[in-house]
Image (cartoon, rainbow, N blue to C red; front, top):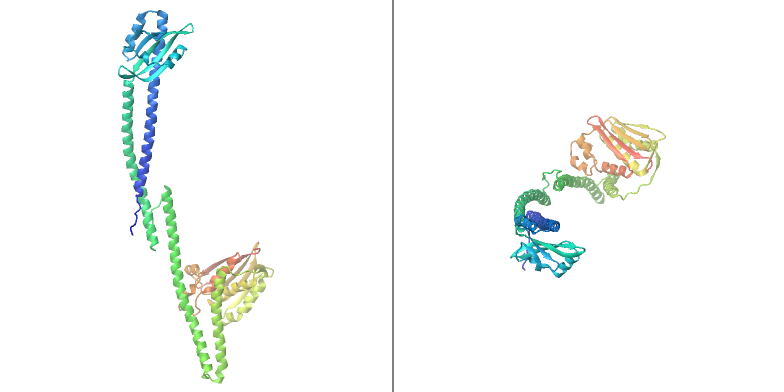
Length: 473
């Protein structure tokens, strides 16, 4: 099956062709207009001169009435290739310095104009003596009637030669301008095409998954601005690609860690069930085995629920029932709930809250936020202090949870909000593990409350979480 190949014209040739075409058309139009203007101007000047000569001759002849006046004009005008003839009222030539006078070239319509007293009848390009001439006829009016007149002619060969000379120089100008324009068009087109070609090659690399490209950019023109936008796009794509790679790496590690965490309780549960079913566990140890199965089952449920909860929150499937809550009561509940866990690690939980402060939030989700953060503070603190603070400002409520634990460096602070962050460093030597989905859920829940959360931390000195929630929506 044959394929029809589409005609492909390079962009540089398109630019050059368009530039040259515009210039050629412009010069052609200019040449035609210029030639027409010059011809009209020359002919009008010629007619004006002939008319002036004719009027002067008629006036002087009328005043003096001698033929020597005509002879003097004949001597002066013949040197300028201007010839004239005097005719009577019937059109008969009575005096002529122009042999074969072209009076016959005057049409009946023009003759009627002369007899009606119109001063000038002008004809261009009349053949006389095998050459083209300009003709002007001026009537002589005596007592309201035409008594005769004068006819003047002048060859236009000199005019034609002058116009031809002008056209020739105009042609030279056009050719020079076209040559310069072609060179400039080629250079500019080459520059623009090279810039576009760099963008095209960069686009091809990006399409192949290579984001390590950069295009020289300027603010000189639209192509430069496009290059700026392209570089900005590449930067964002590169960052997104790095984020995707990092997320994929964390996801794989997270799956491996979750599988590992689930395998341990599942193995324990499976072994205990097999032992109970086959009476391999002594009667005195059965109750302990059942309790262990229950604990491991709750551990699995907690692990699954944490992931499901994150997905619901992330996809905005959580509906908040917000109300005014007394902040002191909430922080008391958090303290009571985590008191034993803190005491086991030698940590003192301290409250610092205004008794009248309120927070406009969903009660269950607020508890979830504060439990997660406080647990993290306890997790990374040994024999220290964790403060739970709360106060109401003008239009917001501020909650602070501060500990004297191991703290974090700046790089860790940037990543702790990311999902699966725990997977990256879960196998460190730290006996308490690291951050998991908990803080990702916390940040999203705070945002759903139209609030903000901030972290201040110094290694080996402690960490402070600050939550700001608007009082009214």
